[in-house]
Amino acid sequence: MAKDFTDVITGSCTGHENPDLWFPEPPKYRPSIENSVALAGQVNEAISICNRCPEMMRCYNEGMKPENISYGIWGGMTAGERLLSSGVEREELDTFTDEAKAIDMFNRISPWLEV
Image 1 (cartoon, one colour):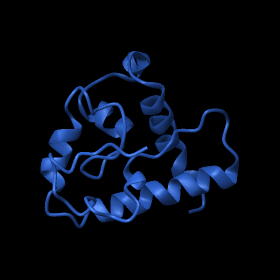
Image 2 (cartoon, rainbow, N blue to C red):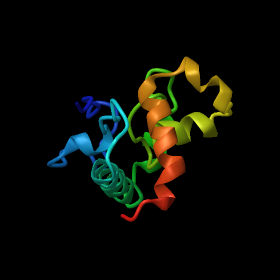
Image 3 (cartoon, rainbow, N blue to C red):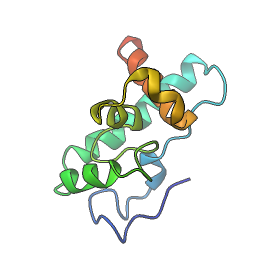
């Protein structure tokens, strides 16, 4: 379910017909190839919109806040990417949400998925 952050950022995502693109549901169990491809498509679509957004840097900064860093796509980066760019070691990821860990793992395997 999408978080309402229209009071914080007014970028390309605000008012989008599918705000859930930026807050994908992580797999609760080992996902099928079809579900993985669908998730990759959703993440790629959101990031492509982010990459054209004039608010991208401001959104990234908002996504780096402790209350936002472990979920969603902010400033064109997934939670796992933001955690890693913040200097958090992979061994420390267990202190963050399961969503961030799942998305980080997905990002590491996504280059091998056909999207």
